[in-house]
Length: 154
Image (tube, rainbow, N blue to C red; front, side, top):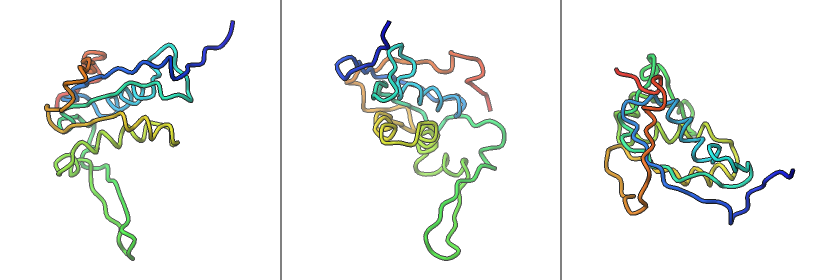
């Protein structure tokens, strides 16, 4: 028996639509990362871009467990002396770009290489319920119904 290795002709990409309203951030990010890589397919090949295109809507309404909304701080440095700055997850979610919380959570769950950067380009995250991807006819994936632990009421 020979090991199956996918070629570009074998790859079939779908469009998946996920509603993030009420879903726990870490569980959502792990499911999205798995779909982007293609690990849910029986023909998964680690060195090929086999994953689906994923659309996440209502990213601003994602749930964060514990007190991470106020305690988890993301830092960056401006490059100037004493130029360290930080923002909590709650401040990012209430700011101008709340979808970045989901994007960064997914990015951090992917490997750190060129293939993962290409796979991350197949992710589209929208803060609200509207998205401009109706022409692709995405299939809905109900992450909240997969496991009762995936949702949380505030």
